[in-house]
Length: 205
Image 1 (spheres, rainbow, N blue to C red):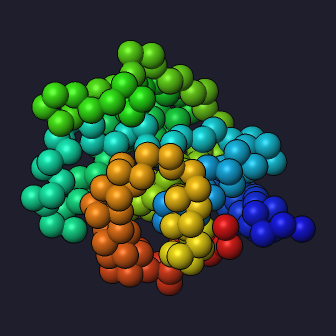
Image 2: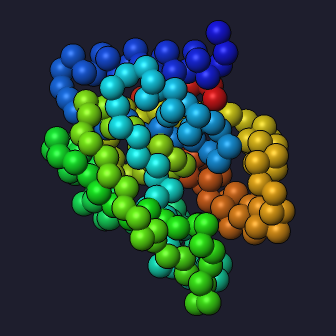
């Protein structure tokens, strides 16, 4: 059995234990960039009735790129995603058993002249399910901790994750900028905000 398959099995077991007592439930699938969270979320979707929400859809597109340089690391952790929009457009409707609809962050269209990004003109619509999987780095953030039933850390060494990112990203200038802005943020988040001991379940990615 591969590590990802073993991780999927562990998470499914933990989910089923919680579903005995309540549903729907929210699972935060957290971990550093390049840990394999998206792949694992897709595997989980095949194994158990669930709906996956990519946290990247709620990136704070309205903050100009240059402004991130002026923010402290704790401020970047707090502001990187639009937590209020995530709650109102996705999490709260699905947890109430209603369909959710939102306009995702549009990276493909590129940065606008003012340094901000836009949202896609095409809405994402998701139907309710017993299990809601929020997939992405910082998904177990304290900003939404009151909604989370199971916080999962996909744990992969930093060097290995960075190798994966290097293979995945063709634009090396963008990748260098990304590392400058976010490497320290991930270090801080996974050591001070959500250390390994703060997760309900830790799996290998």
